[in-house]
Amino acid sequence: MTTWWLERGLRVFWWALMAFLYAPLAVVVFFSFNQINSSARFAGFSLQWYERLFANDVILSALANTLILAATSTTIAVVVGGLLGYGLYRYRRLRLGWLIWLIYLPVVMPDIVFGIAEMTFFVTLSDFVPVLSLGLSTMVIAHVTFQVPFVALLVNARLLALDAQLFEVCADLYAAPWQRAWFFILPVLRPAIIGSVLLALTLSIDDFVISFFTAGPDSTTLPIYIWSAIKKGVTPEVNAIATLMIASVLLVALLSLIIQPASSLASDQRRSRL
Amino acid sequence: MKALGRDTRHLLISVAPGALCIGVFLVLPSLYLMAMAFLSTGPYGLPALPLSLQAFRELAGFGFLGWSPGNLYTLLRSIWQSALATVLVIAIAYPAAYYIATRAPRWRAILLLAVVVPSWTNQVIRSVGWMNLFAPGAPVSNVAAGLNLIEPAMGLFPSQFAVIVGLVYNFLPFMVLPLYAAFERLDYGQVEAAQDLFARPGAVFRHAVLPQTLPGLMAGTVLVAIPAFGMYVVTELLGGGKATMVGNLVAEQFSQSSNWPLGAAGAIIMIVMTLIGLRVLRRLGQRLGGEHEVVL
Image (cartoon, rainbow over all chains, first blue to last red):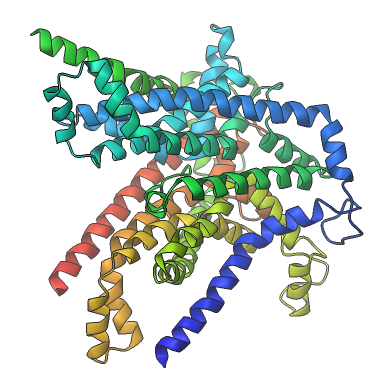
């Protein structure tokens, strides 16, 4: 009897939770098809905001910047972070406490302090090193810096879950180092690497605060564009851009559901930036 | 000798790029920022010599017009708002995690994903969603006005209420995931034993469920409370200056009212508070865990 009531209550609670979680997103999607520029009254279906969006050069270049930034930083971060995760595993018997401290630093550092520290640093350095004046290059550096720890931790966790004797098996079979890397380590790490790529991509596209502070005048990304549009009070296409970004996230979610089992999702609890 | 050399080289190749990246592009900038707090404010709010503690004095509230408690209130508000949000998140995440963990295995991945997916969208977009829902004239605001909770035509945003909702919305998944992991390993034998002994639901939870899910709860609290304290976007967009936290105070010193040393001093406070928070939570976890062993 009590369990029946508990079950019923839980079910109601669950659907209320789903409403809470998806209502803000649904509202954005719904009003992106509005005929008038309002998020309070729906005047009729129209695609005009999407048409305007694809005719707006500023938005299109923001989209390009977002994608270039995400792709470049992810590529670098997966290589650098993967090596770091491997090194952390391989030399785990050495006392690398300082290294673990270093890896967790970007994870626990408040976003805003992270972004401002990099901004002041780059602004000062750019007097001597012109490449480091605020723009896409500094954004890539900042993104790589916060992506690397997550990739390293993911790769390291995967290696720790392996039977350590497998490495000895490679040695017993006289595998050369490159053979061990190519035929054993890389295939074994494949799920972790795919996971890292997805994670690093979403981290990059998700980020606003750090991008905001390390961005230059010509390197506006979509989140920064939305932010400044809201701040200026000009918001016509905002719902449409946001809808496209939500749709791409849902697509990634579907993909990850096909690729990854639930258990690895649970172990990804640190997946987003703290 | 030669083997050692190779090992060292391998260690360097694998670890050095990542360590250098974090060292040069995070540790150095942070040290630079922290050093800035000990300089005086020059023209355009930029740091200048000589060394001084002026920034900390200003941060503590001492200005031209004597002492004002504004900054102190901001710090206390940050602590209060992140604590409140954490408690609410825990209250929602417990039943949610229990619900997911008690479904058929093939459903769990999907339900878990359903909770996590909104957090994959951009922070700014999520806040835009709540702005739409809470704006004056929006359905949710109309309901609230109809219940006489707010003045008609006022809207629920910007307000402290909107900030708390935004914080809960942002961090909920970070509590559900570790709690779910804990519930998945839960020994239901203990729960049944408690029920067989006619323990009331509250007692069952306290003595059979809570101790077993404590590691997940503590992990989740770290993942929620620490970043909530440093939140910037939600307070900026949903608070409208009514619920500013330390992060907003710091950011302001590097944009509108330019005063880099003051902002740097604020950043030091944020870093120190974060480290204290991590330490307190770890201690709390150890103490609660210790008690758990005594009880058993």
